[in-house]
Length: 612
Image (cartoon, rainbow, N blue to C red; front, side, top):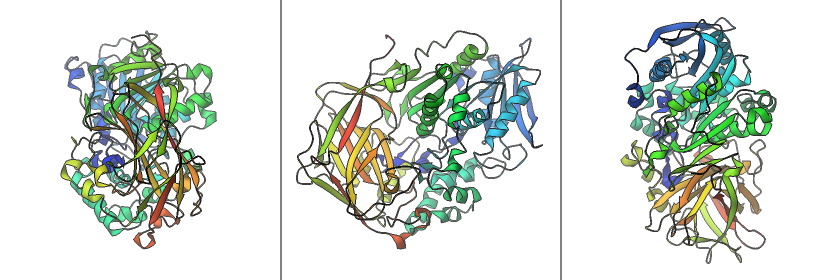
């Protein structure tokens, strides 16, 4: 969905799925020659356009792959995809070659399926009906599993909501969380939404339009430079969309977004084994984590004991096909997990009474970059052994420059206030975002510091002292910052880096926040200008890394101003309807004194629960 490489533009400012996620369907499309080489030329029986009837009479189209040498009915696997079934061809061959009947199913209104495509909301009931139909087929013994990533991962969680009796297990990878990470992240929408909606417009694939880097950059640039309302974005890109406007009508968490995801009661009723997979740099990590955390909070003890979580050093596409290099970072050989083989081992264990996959040594597997090894923990909370506080400070309010920054200290600051001014009419971010190398698939977005340097004077920057020893971190950063605004609203980005002894940097984590949602994502509350309040940034992405001796941590707090996200003009009105005429400059004042102990909290990694 919001798939592929997670780009962090403007020196790590935001997840720009819009400009660089050009392989959204690669989650289940990319051929794996290593796996294919293991198969005979035709180890399966193939049938195109199998018709699957739904309860309302609509028929979905499926491409069927049946193991040729199977003597009796066995478990079957399917994926529910909006990207047309043929993009799952390699996966179909692989599963059939390893003893599983596989069905790539076009969702309602896409590919060769009947009906009208209504993104996201249709998959729950339809997924249920597909499960129960497959369970009755001669090739199936009544045990049905699901697979797939991104939107296909979401389709698994949507299906689970309906509790189909014959669903035996799911393996959701990089699962989209509607209302969590798509089409809004912390209630801030992407411009990418229109790119994706164009991709899935009509029945056929619009992949060439979707994958045209320059085209989409120019479309977003016209809208951005015109300071036009976000509600007009679909007109700007030439594809008026009722779905886009429906999403705009729900700017924060409400019953509409709740209806996409399992309720506490549905989590409590789950009884099937689940294998969840995400990555450090997965655009949809927030969604994948929200499902996992929801199940851990509301599920039964028996069901929770059968839910495993894998967090690799991967971007969105890498969660399905791990790569040794992402965004300028290189990882060790241990990171190259054979995800397809893990699927088969999981299905063998959960549906054929096989042994537990050797890789799953405990409930949570997480990869520590720098150590280049997997660690294990009995729970997500147990990944973090302790939390280390670093207090924000500065000398005479000088914290606006990378080279003359504020400090992160082990003890609270004696006092002070740091400020930046943000003008939403400022279009200077284009000087970085429009660079040709930034718009390429090979862009080193995790290590490039140019955007950060170019934003000096318009942000707040803080550094720790050089670390005295190697330090392993794992889990979620937190930031408590005491802030006052002179306007009723604005958007922030808080992001964290390792700055190595040689001056190079590595992006670690980020959180975006709209001030009106500082207290709750469900209840907007405008800011009282001049009032100092504590802003708790508690939605950073998961990261795990060995920080080298001599490295420092860098914290950057900055305005959110990019081609890639809806622009907040700071007026306090309906943001989607605001334009340049509503723009207000805002002064952001960050306090750090005895009464306002602004601090960054660093997750220190626990030792592995399993010996190495």
